[in-house]
Image (cartoon, rainbow, N blue to C red; front, side, top):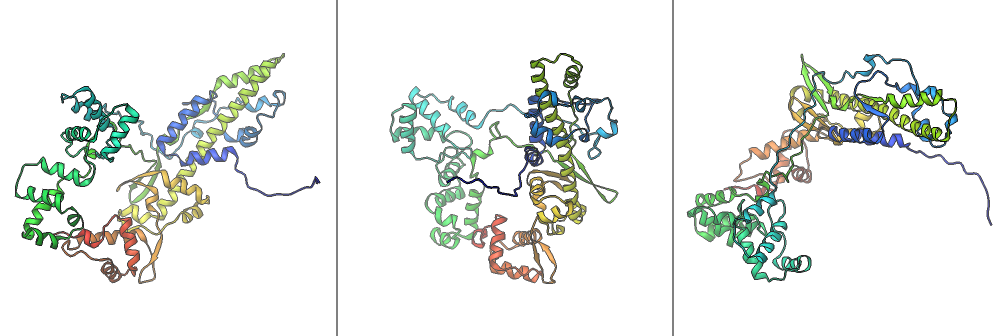
Length: 484
């Protein structure tokens, strides 16, 4: 049986404009510029560059107009809302949070040969039968960016048959792989770290210590990687100094031969800071990158189309359809201009709050001066939602007198020292790193001893917390830090 009843429901719904604004806030400078270009292409009513007729946000109701533009008939549109004889003063069109001498410099990209193409070019210097050349090129294509062939020979043989229609055997593929092992950088095409190191050692000039290094990698690889030096000294009946010299030969090798190639396949991301902090007369000065404050305006042509429609006495059906389209584009352009302004304000006030919370650090550059700071601290200070602050912190960079850094690196939890004061976990990590760097590598400190040292310095940290911080800092356990 069907029943009809009323149901009141309170729900929170984000408008399309709010969603798009959040996406704009999250974008770093380069991605923002790309998004701006896309909007300029998609919306012909939006133009860039200086213009006299620029709409103020108070001239229109962004949300209502944008959401309801499909339901309003052409006759119901108030044309006067889209026409304005008032000129907006220049001072209202300028942003004072970036330098006037900011330059939009384009970084040219060097035309280089890719890593894999370089290997193919080297391969062309070998005289090979056609079928072997096809196998060699397939092997080169299977090498990853680190320079390794992380596949078994049997897998390669099967793939050649199924995908290339080339039928061969493991012996032939192995023979061709030895040719690839002759290519530069030495070690390329290795199937694992052990083979990679051996290939490089065998290309070195033979000597007492090179021969020892080859024997270590070839026959005692596990003992070497686990740093069982006492076992190795007993095995080879050599002195500590001799073993040290042999290990030094291994330490000179490159465990990732492909990583040393500076080809075009390895693009180095150019970081463009979104903010700049400078010290002027002992005070901090924050500026927003001028590329985040573009000059946009509504197209005059579209305004003139509206005027033409208004002046027309005989409005055809085609004209009414056109004015519906024009209204939609004008509403969208006006909202986008306002969204850009909101984005600038959000970025600036958020970074300004972070700068003041970490003022001591930005003045002296000492990482130990960083105070505990979480997203909520900044959100409460500027009156924004935590998610908004997170979007700013996770993808934006700031140029400081001490280098360009990701903003989220300044956030950290707090811990209490022996004086009961809140200190940043970043400060503790820095101290831990300094202790490990200055330790005697022949007798590195285990975690429990590191905990005791930190406790003496006034930081009562548990051993398991030390292990956690070590992992975050990529510091290996004591045995793996040992050197002879």
